[in-house]
Length: 137
Image 1 (cartoon, one colour):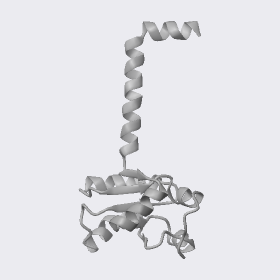
Image 2: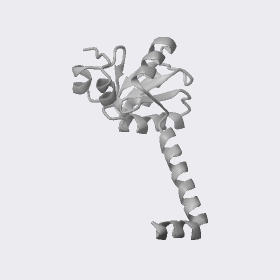
Image 3: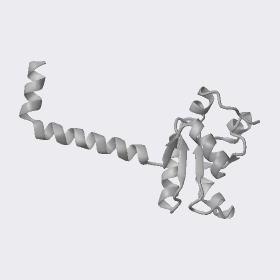
Image 4: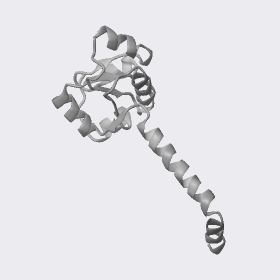
């Protein structure tokens, strides 16, 4: 332990820069794809702000159970579908997939296109089910 503390003390600037880079990386990755919502926060946004919920899973997964009122769109077609719905770029959108990875990627694309209120359910449908939230069939 003495060697570690000596190393840190002698390389304080390098260790500080490393920690700063790690913090910036975590913040950047955390914001990628829009705001992360818990299932409870998503439910409130759906009920109070009339958020559009887009389910990015396959049609088979979607038909086995989905968030009430959600629409099933393939990840590659989200932009086309939103423009055909004439969905305003400042209205809330909630993206959900199985684990949250597709949602993060699609959310990042929507943000680049100018959508301002893009949200994802942190952990996707796995988290939604894990918290006991209801599904519609």
